[in-house]
Image (cartoon, rainbow, N blue to C red; front, side, top):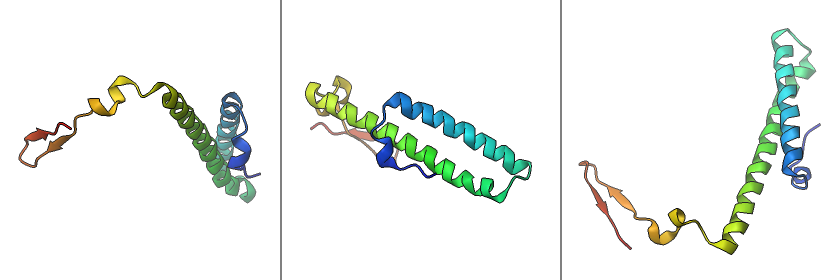
Length: 102
């Protein structure tokens, strides 16, 4: 069955990682079935499993990014990411560059 992203968002990271491992095992089994000449239903399921893996990875990454946003909203960004430490560098075609200080 197709996995929905809204169902995944309520799960913990450990559960998502376990589900990801299960999906990867299932995908490898389906690929073996494809090589050995399996049924058409198994071949069509490869696409569904691949997209499910992508959904799980997307939810994991989005959750991780959201947690970092919440953390840095309270604490502030780390020093190397702070806006005042960034110096834009403009590269010219001639090989030189100019630093702009704001």
